[in-house]
Length: 212
Image (cartoon, rainbow, N blue to C red):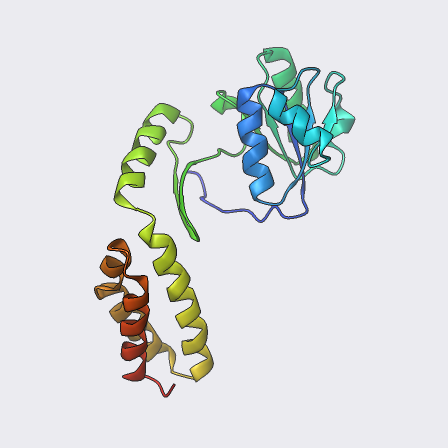
């Protein structure tokens, strides 16, 4: 049984072995998390070359050496060479580093889930490495169910939560208020493009619970 977790990677050194399209996707995802990314490959996609030229990533073009893992928080192996992938996994295991070898569940101590993102809403789907294709299909279904309206709604809820917490309302009443907001038609208003009306109604609901 795996333990699901989201990691804070800001300022963490992360290494990607490989320079193809898969490596590029991994790099872009890590950069979104504000990780400090190093790519190790003699050949890089044009996009990775551009990122290296802009100093947004560090590039090492020589063949993988274990010392490249010095100071790393995690490493992702995405080469088409089984010998290099095994060296990466074995070295990371010895050092107690998180490691993922793409398309090789047996050489991973973590899996990267398929992800649906709507602003601060993140829904992760994992098949424990059994079927990335199924995880992809489930993600596509969820993307249709959870539209862009969730981004605006969740942003509003975060702002309201800060105000409610500052108000001193006790935890039991806070929980009831937040559930009332979520169960109301506010999300439907965002779905119809009526964000301002949703905010107005949310303010009215707040007045019933706290002095504002």
